[in-house]
Every structure is written in structure tokens, then in C-alpha cells.
Amino acid sequence: MNKKVAIIGAGLTGLSAGIYLQQKGIETEIFELSGNAGGMCTTWVRGGYRFDGCIHWMVGTLPGDAFYKMYLEVGALEADTPIHHAESLQTEIEGVLYEVPLQLEPFRQFLLRISPQDKKKIEHFCTAVSAMGVKTPDGFGAVLGFTKQLIPFMRVLKRYTSMTVREYAEGFQSQIIRSLLCDLMPPQYTVVGLFMMLGMRMCGNAGYPLGGAYDVIGRMETKYHSLGGKTRYNSKVDEIVVEYGKAVGVKSGGQFYASDVVIAACDMYDTIYRMLEGKYHHQQLETMLDSAELFEPLLVVSFGLKQKLGIPDALTFNYAQGIKTAPGLIADRIFLRAYDFDPSAAPYNGSSVMVLLGSQLDYWQNLRQDNKEEYQQQKKVLADTVAKALEDRFPGFTDAIEVVDVATPATYVRYANLYRGSWEGFAPTPEYIRAKIKNTVEGVDGLYLAGQWTTVGGGICTAVKSGKDTAQTISHDLK
Ligand SMILES: Cc1cc2nc3c(=O)[nH]c(=O)nc-3n(C[C@H](O)[C@H](O)[C@H](O)COP(=O)(O)OP(=O)(O)OC[C@H]3O[C@@H](n4cnc5c(N)ncnc54)[C@H](O)[C@@H]3O)c2cc1C
Image (cartoon, rainbow, N blue to C red; front, side, top):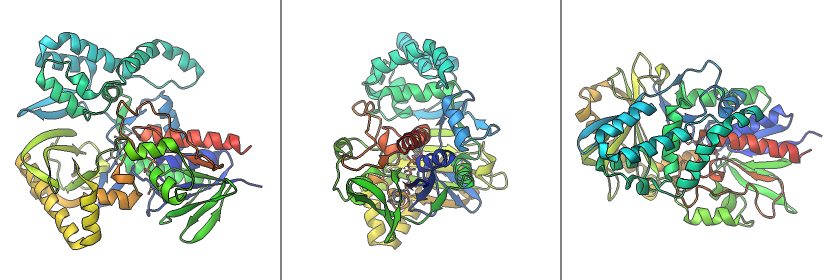
């Protein structure tokens, strides 16, 4: 008889697992609480504008990379999907706007111009960045060829994984370079994350596929369905049913759906404490959910502009007046992304601009629960304040606005059930970056954990890979 797998979550992980399992002839059904596929790889479509709630840089966009091959397998990319590579990032430090090149040699020269006295440190920095800018090997032959690159790569990992961005930045004499590094990556994260982000982007292996998250998810969903996979949207799973120590299916909307295997490709707090009712243990996850650092909850303010204003792809700047993102929480730095480069982001040759601000979950969640009108009002106040900040910077901005959208930390929780609004799971701090999270739960056979909560730091490539690996394990175990 055909084996059946129930998958909880239609994010990148759930879709990827579903695609690979269907390809192996194993029947699958995905249960998704929201009305769409995508999870955190989402896009808000408003009045013809697309606000890409995910992709800034997607590791593995270089043909020949193992992740690239995997993206082609699941349909996340097609061989002719154009990839956009930003040439630079702009950031304002102490009132001066710096354009940070995303090519190694110009980057080295840029840093040397800022601080010639940091020459030795800059050389080390560039060596580390270059060592992390590699293609993930695909196949045995490629692994052999990778050996030459592997040595410096491993050396960097060994030496720097335990060091935070802040600690590394402190080694520079120049205050500007110190600020710059902490601007490029949160200061408490492992500095290896910074090396990797820069290295991958500089070697052209972490671009932005035109069409963004909308097309990535659309293609994966189509592929999954074309292989016979079934999706149930607006179907929150309330229970993973366990009988005699084995997962035998899921309950959603009061109904039981039998399966031979269950994949939890969703939030792990919900899995352990609600869907398994806290009856089964995963000591490591429980400890991490209790004490590991999570990603800071986000406010995302998006604008559809009827014309392009020449706003750079990525810009961080100071806003002295500050923006209140929760009571007692003022953001005086604004991080924005503009999508002039992607024609699919806006109709009539317009553009979309998104501002991301760190915030706090409880305030927005309580407000939404207790007083929806005031919640909407505060979203409007926020959008107006951000629009004013952008008008000050880019005259004509408010006149160009056609559509406004605000997502709060409460939106993320409502939309994808995220624990504490952490949109990428556990933060990549030195303490946890090496954590290998077990993908099974003690005392429950036939249940596999997958996705961004099982790989510290999350991300697109890790989610798709996690789905693939889980599918491989299951097809082996079901034989
Ligand atoms: C603002 C932002 C920017 C990002 N930028 C990047 C980037 O530039 N590069 C990069 O690599 N990554 C980035 N990411 C991270 C990346 O999007 C995620 O790591 C990845 O999409 C996670 O996929 P997932 O399938 O593991 O989890 P999720 O996307 O969280 O999917 C889980 C799914 O499970 C569903 N679900 C949860 N509970 C239940 C339940 N009880 N029943 C049914 N369904 C349930 C959810 O609704 C969701 O659809 C970004 C994310 C965000 C939010």
C-alpha cells in the first residue's frame, strides 16, 4: 500500500520536502494554517505592488553551486531566472554617506581609504571574506576540486566562529569601520555570518532572483501540485496524534487525517508544547526555546510608488527625530530596501520601497487583541512617520505613494504562528551557531522535525535543504 506523509507547514521547507517525496512516489499532503504557501518566504501583494517580505540575498544563485542545482530541482529557480546582484550597499555613519562596494578589490580599497592605519586588519578581513565566498560543491568530483578552497574556509570557521561581530570590529582602530561592520550584521552575531554574507555576495553566489519570493514560491507550489502533492490551506494543525509511541497522523479543524509519517516543517515551540501537548521531550530544543537568542521582531512598512525615485537598493541612514516602534522603543536608524531593479515589484514602471524596523512583540500583539481600531491607528501613525522620514531624505516621496502596507510582529505571529515573532528562528550567535539540533522527538517514532527552527540562523538555502534531507531520510526509513 502507498505510504502517506502529512507535512505541517507550506513554507520553503514543507514545499521542498513535499516535492522530493512526491518525486520518490510517496504521497504527501501539506497542512498550512494561512491561506497561502510561503511562510516567511512571503510576498504581500497590494494594488498591483509586490512587497517581498523575504529575499535580500539568496545563497546559491550561482550556476554550478549545489544549492543552485537544488533550487532548479524544486523549481525555486529556473535556468533562465535573472539574478540581480547589488553593486553596493549604502550606509550613513556620523552624518557621512558611505557606498560599500560588493566586490572584493573595490571593498578593500574602500576600507583602506577610510583607515590606512588599519591596513593589516583590513587585509585579514578581506582574506576571511574571500575564503567564505565559495561555491558549495556539487557531487564527489566537485568536492575534490573544493579541497583547495576548503582549507582557508575551514581555517576561518575554526578561528572566528566563537567571535561576535562586535568583538571582531573592536580590532579596528577606525571608529567608522567598527560602526560599519556592526551595521552590516547585528553585533552579537558570529562574525563568520558577516564574512559569509559579504563573501557569498562578492563572488556572485547570493543574489536576488527577479520576481522575488512571489515567483520562487509560486514555482515551487506549481511543481508540488504537478507532482500530485495536495495542499490544505487555512488548516492549522492542532495535534500530532501519537499512538503507542508512533505518530499516526494529525488533527486539524476537529478532523483526524491518518498518515504513516508526520513532518513538522513549522514552528518548534508550537510543535513541542501545543501539537504534542508537552507530553514528549526534546531537551535541546526546549532549552534553546527557553534561553537562546531569537531574531528581533520586525515592523515592515512598505510603500508602492507610482514612479522610480532612484532610491538605492539598500540604504541605512540616521533619523534624528526617531521613530517609535513600541512604547519606550525608538528607532533612530532606518534600514530600507528599494526594488527599482525588479519590474515585477510595481506596475507602470513604478517601484516598491520597504523599511524594516526592530520592534517588540507584546505591545503589538496585545494592542491587536484588545483594541483593533487603535492597532490600525498606530499602524497608520507609524506609516506616516516613516513616510515623513523618507520625504525628508527623498523629496517627492509622499507624492509618489500609491499604496501603503504595515506588517507588525503580531502580523508575523498571526500569519505563520511564529514563536515570539522570530522570523528566522534562532539567532546565529557564537553560543548556538554550532548547535546540531536533533530532528526527532524522544518517544515519538515517525515524526521528523525540519526547517528554520532546526538549523540555527535559518535562511532560504537551509530551509530548502532541510526539506530535501528530511525527504531523503523518510524515503529511506519507509523502505
Ligand atoms: C523579513 C525577512 C527577511 C529575510 N531575508 C532572508 C534573506 O535575505 N535570505 C535568506 O536566506 N533568508 C531570509 N529570510 C529567512 C527565510 O525566509 C526563512 O528562513 C525561511 O523562509 C523559513 O522557511 P521554513 O519553511 O523553514 O519556515 P516558515 O517559513 O516559518 O514556514 C512554516 C510554515 O508553517 C506554517 N505553520 C506553522 N504552524 C502551523 C500549524 N500549527 N499548522 C499548519 N501550519 C503551520 C506557517 O504558517 C508557515 O507557512 C528572511 C525572512 C524574513 C521574514
